[in-house]
Amino acid sequence: MLIPSSFRKLPEENGCYNNQVVLGGTVSQMSSALGQLSHCKFLGEAHYQVSHSTYSPQWGAAEYGARIATANRVQATYKSYEYNFLYQSTDQSERLALLFVYGADYTAGSCQIDAELRDTASNSYTGAVLDYGISFTAPQHLEALQVNFGQAFPVDRWVFSGAREIAAPTNTSPELPRPLYVPTANRGDLLNIKVTINSLSLIAVHIYDVYRLEVTP
Image 1 (tube, helix red, strand yellow):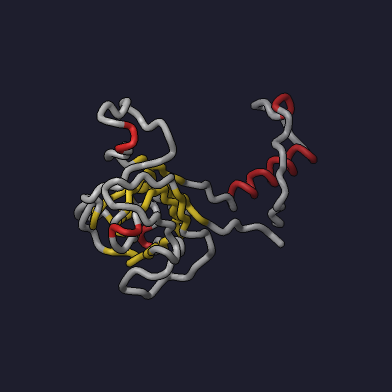
Image 2: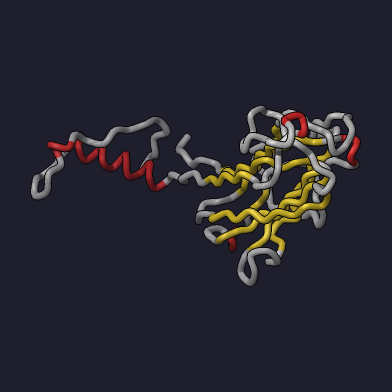
C-alpha cells in the first residue's frame, strides 16, 4: 500500500457509526489515514529553566524579586558547574537537538558549554555514557562580552546544536556541535543529558527529538 505524504482527513462521523456497513470512499479514507499513522513518529521535547541568580548589580540591593530586563549576571562561582537534565525518550527517538540560552563573560576565562548523553539504569547522574557529546566554545560558537568579571550583565544569547541527520558517533571526548545520538537499545528509556558550563550563566535548556519522517516517494 502506498503511504501518501499529504494530509488526509478522516471520514465524516455520521458515516462511521457502529453496526453500519461502510464501503468505497469511506474505507479508502480510513485506510489512508491509518497508513499515515503507522509511519508517524511523534515529536518529543523538554524545557528547563535553570534556577540561580541572574540579577544584575545594576538593579541595586532590592533586586525587585524578578528579572526585569533581558540581561543576566555572570558570577565568579559559575565555573565548572554541572547540571543533569532528564529526558524521557520514545521508541522513535533517534537524535536530540539542544538549544541553550546563556549569558557569557569572556574575561572570566574560557567560556564553554559541554553536553553528553548518559543512561539512568543505575543512577540518574552517573549512568553509562551513551554519547560523549559536544562542546560549544567562545568565540567559535558562543558570544561573550569583554567586561569586568563579577559585574557583567550580558544580554541573553542562544546557541543551537543543529538538527542534521547523523550516524552513530565514535568520539570519546566532546566534539563540534551536533545533535546527540540515542543508541537503538536506549530508545524509550529515561535519559540524562549532562551539561557542564564554564564562565557563563546558563538560563534555559530546550531538548527536542529529531527524526526522519518515512513517506512513500
